[in-house]
Length: 352
Image 1 (cartoon, rainbow, N blue to C red):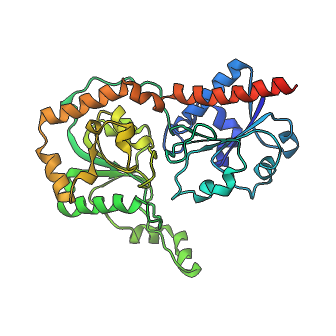
Image 2 (image 1 turned 90 degrees about the vertical axis):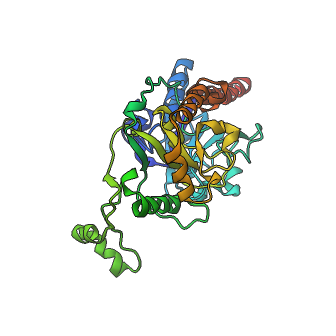
Image 3 (image 1 turned 135 degrees about the horizontal axis):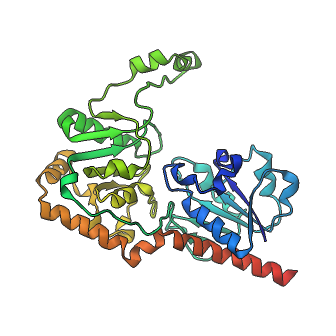
């Protein structure tokens, strides 16, 4: 069986990168690892996965898998969406970032949709997956002495006007620490060293002058620069990490952010999906919704005893070894997607 694949992020098609073992560092770290594992399992089953690159080859495929809804300005996916072959959609992205992939009219194009959105899951057309997913983690031995820094946040300098956006909340808590306890927070990320001019074209043209973008960029005492490499290597030095999703109020929307904290044995301060305790025990994280103000939150963090801290760490370890973690595993992702691919294969054989 030939499976044609297409990623909304078309840059991942170059040199077949999306189907290579080197995708662990792309798109926020870890997001493509589950699909690569699925690719390997497909090869063992005798299925061929091929990134679509020519319109004339599209009719040869038996199944189409789209990772997020494609940019239909490109004629290849535009045509692929019209052919009468089974089509799967892996809907990873958040509505605040890519609203087009959540328009109900596009759902009609697909036979099956795999998504994090708890509100859609019916196990008929919509099936639950998490993005990203992980191999069972091997945790380092916890050493409290190595937690020699207080709190960290890793976030790029982005803006979004959507009412559920959380970029502005990250900036809000950064500014609070900047004003009240600048020695207690380190923050890392891209885009903070350059100001972005917005507005009419004659204003935006100033972005070409790098010395101006650097001159007008806000200077933060708490900003420690960009971070390259696995986030675990940075997070493991901190007691706490501010862990805000890109958006709030979407049930089931859990990304890599809280898991990077878990794998680093750093306690996350979380804000995001409203039903997080349906997926992750409340003992594993600090829910910022429980505090009336950042002052109250800070007082709680500063007054936390070693035994209280260790209770969080033990709860994190217990969760990562439990059945509750299984839906976030690469094994779960691969087996679920493969199950539905094999149903397509069985139907093809019946109709051959």
